Image (cartoon, rainbow, N blue to C red; front, side):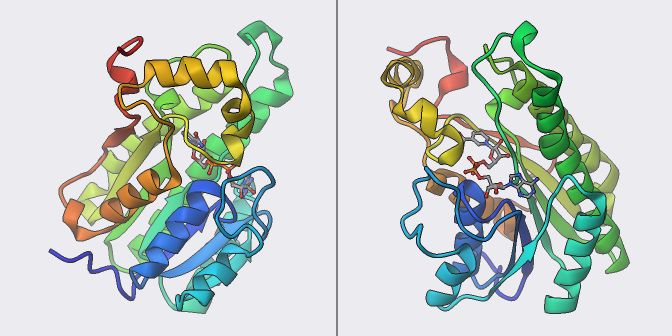
Length: 266
Ligand SMILES: NC(=O)c1ccc[n+]([C@@H]2O[C@H](COP(=O)([O-])OP(=O)(O)OC[C@H]3O[C@@H](n4cnc5c(N)ncnc54)[C@H](O)[C@@H]3O)[C@@H](O)[C@H]2O)c1
């Protein structure tokens, strides 16, 4: 079966950098018209982008794809409402919503985190995804049903990890939010799934990637013996967006090189 994504319209939040950028460009290669939504157009410093000098939209257009940037802070309900209406104004409809924008806070025990750390993770990772799901569903229902939502969760949403409690709490809520939307809107033909990567090479993990002690500890724990790549996530996102995954619904897919199978590997 082909991917059959040509002509679809997708929003990808946090698409200036990392996973979001990878998903946006991979979708565009499949003929999807993509709204790149982010606080900024240029990629974050410290990432692993191949063409960091280009914005995501420029990279997509250079490759012959169709993309448009919309500035959006996913923590603002008004911004997310406007994101949906600007998408419809620009491309006429919405088929796929990828709630990818997220932030990380780590390196402290629970009693050491400040309110601001908890608040920041909650605002972006939970409320941002909640607004994205809510407003996309409203639009999908208005269009007569059908639609596809993909949330970028984490293995941190499936289990606890040390020294990142505020992030884990937010990812746990995001995982359950994904299940709740799947339960309530499946009968409308709206599929909702989550991707749960372990550490992958993006600006978000650059500090950990550069820390030799962490790198050794991490690789030891992974049966496949490598960091995740953005392409691991984008391949799965394309599959989840396509009809090839048409019976997958409410699934939180572990994408972790086997990490969560064991405490440490051989
Ligand atoms: N990189 C990893 O190892 C990893 C692992 C598991 C899950 N994740 C999740 O994947 C998602 C993407 O992570 P990444 O590694 O690509 O991150 P990243 O830091 O490389 O990129 C995140 C992008 O989101 C944007 N963003 C941040 N706050 C925003 C806001 N309020 N509104 C709009 N855009 C905003 C940033 O500007 C940036 O372009 C996040 O939800 C993250 O929690 C990442």
